[in-house]
Length: 419
Ligand SMILES: [Zn+2]
Image: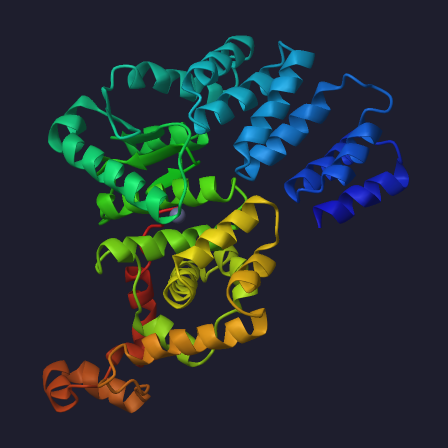
């Protein structure tokens, strides 16, 4: 879609440098080097040293989690325009996300000096001064930063878990991380949001992974229930799959593997089947694997997480971890995800069918002795009038299956997302 808009712009002005830059950025995201090069050439036609070209490409790549390449372009932009606050800020904040803390803070500080009105730069610099006082502990290639209060309470436990997650998962997915993983557990939700996004907000996130950097809120800074150990394991799985795919894994698969790996540690971690998902799978009311990304864009996001985790589980259980490793390796070389999966499992239409069978089996194993039929309105009224005897008389009836029961239950069952 973005591509169409850019092409419309070029139809009006065939030399529009920013439209050509946009096309170049899209081509780079899709690993089409040739197309990217020719678009960059067009973008630089009249103003070869235009720093905006490298800046836009850098920001686009970093926005797709392609930090290493994004930072390279942003470095190039800075060389062309060393005093641009926006370039310095984009470069610095993405270096911070990619674990390059020293140059990252330096560049953000410079952006802040040049443009005191950049709110995100101001927020980050204010936070930096606080983070400097936080102790860092290291074990087996994991560096953990926490507030002194949190470190005293659960620092050792968090460090041991993070190190165990890193070692277990790197071994399982057959990779060696070239740099230590930085885990920052911040005591206040607002600080977490600023460290992660540069701005307050992001209340629906428990943790975020950028690859070499994981940010999380400490249990003390958060409302509601969430298991920080499960979140840490989930985020560390992202670190591993991002690295294995050279940051070219689609979101649904990354989330799927992370939730699957949570369950592998502990049956109570990660999402499990529930009455709503049970019905959706049994009715076949779920998108095909090839369109799973759509679930993450709308209301079905929680189902999307669970659905994707079942796909990951199915692939690993049926075709072995070797198949998953090969899929990630193919993604790292730019192969489209459907092709990579088909190559290491079976043709995609067959896979869709056998996966759905697999999911339906799990769904029908959920409360197999219960009576899942919907409550009629009369039954519901009778239940509401006098619940205890009604339940005693209908011990296997699932009350959730009445429309009146659905809404409050849905609110209740919308947990925060360990992104
Ligand atoms: Zn996640």
